[in-house]
Length: 342
Image 1 (spheres, helix red, strand yellow):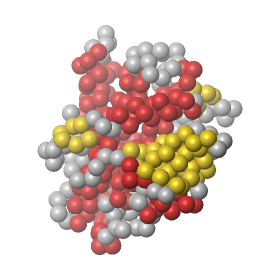
Image 2 (spheres, one colour):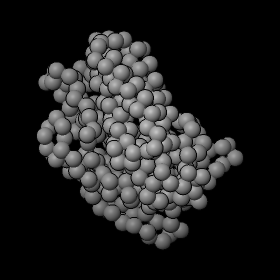
Image 3 (spheres, helix red, strand yellow):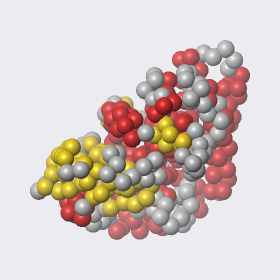
């Protein structure tokens, strides 16, 4: 079984990343800040003005450590990966199935069903744990999500599946503001805004969705899948469509609940954000470091995998799901088994 390693997040602006033997060394103005052996790292994510030497990229490539470059506020720019080791037969099977309408529908319904079911679980858990005075709107949305799940039990063309997913996402986010219990002046949610995020909550969501997309892309690559060719998300140059498919089932319960806990427990505050002239809302650097530490700790939590029946760390779930997806593509499974969060 793959072991859960550390993701190295480099947020310090002006940081210089160099190589010393098999160690990665991070410096700022010629002062060494951190030194890590390469074997303790599974991936590196650089935010903003971070300089990485070619020797570091070479070491990471040799060690199967992915290096991703993001803007300071978390928008993806580029990735550096080592030599591809994927099974060509697996990729051929993937490419074939992503052109067959029946299999496109089967896979897409699995991803979307898990996303909607997990969003509904987040909503129902909130109702159970907090019992707001007026539950009518939340009950209505829970019922609409249940209806969407019923519709997804039947085969449908991909356009219809995408429509169901879009409607369910709008329903879910229409009540997302009710999940925010504290600091409502600084943390409110009216609608999902992406490029750029226009408020503090959207800034947090976009930031961690980007981190999750990185993890899912790395997971696809590590088991030999082509992260660019997906089922639910249409092909687009430079977009990791399969990784975006894979991350759908994780969004509500892994990212959304984590973001809500940061807000409701007071781990982030209004002063931790800055608004740019463009209207984009971004996290301050020091806060990024702290909440990324919390995210890394969250990935160490365990659950019993519903399909495998084994306890696994949350950080390994993208890798495990990518393995299960590969098993379906090879014909070892009748269908892809997504995670339904309980």
